[in-house]
Image (cartoon, rainbow, N blue to C red; front, side, top):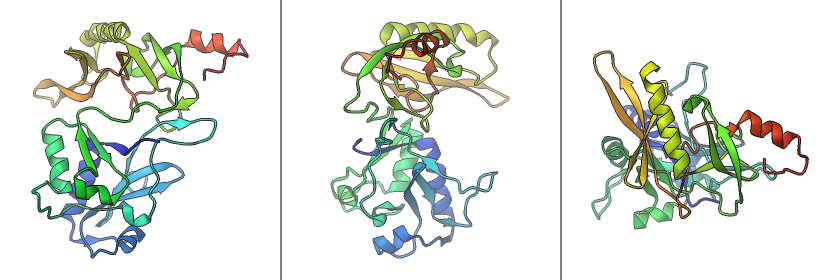
Length: 281
């Protein structure tokens, strides 16, 4: 299990801004269990579909399909047992996250921290499950790259993988055996540097014929990889960093982890289906 839950800042900050802008608040069981007065907050809830953050502001925020607007903490799932990497709240009160807190040591409150993260290109927000960790400044973490990427007990199998995000290119990777990501449909992959270099060159070659934002590009910054998307507002076009990937202890990169739907390449899937002894999926 991971140490904390990981969310995209771009998905969490709008929820926090919504809660901060309202003048009434939905009273949830999380607030009752926390024993605190009405105030703007994010609500961490856990259900069979995963772990979510939502705004407690009223009027509520609904999506086009009528569902409450929420941000999902995507993590790995062990297919055999259904176990996931997200820590489970020990008490509903742990899921009430006030936006405004006066810290005697001058630390930013949660809303200011998320705004700072967005302004300074911090793409990920990590939530520690225990409220007591706030006293040490460890409950909330912002980072340019995601933490807790790989399952601690995973084994890795070489495979050829692909996804639409990279224009259907096929790349050699190490795949976490028996684990899925992206709401239990994608593979968790790590790529050696040469595969990432091939991926970057392929994406660069796609760019002249791309529509803005159709495919990303990968740029090496020292030993790190910046994942960038083109943003075109009709007047100007610029590349914006969306994620940053650091190499692991084996010098491999988890490109697109928890965001891109990696699958086995067609030839690889056919080969494995023909071999009943292959259990790498």
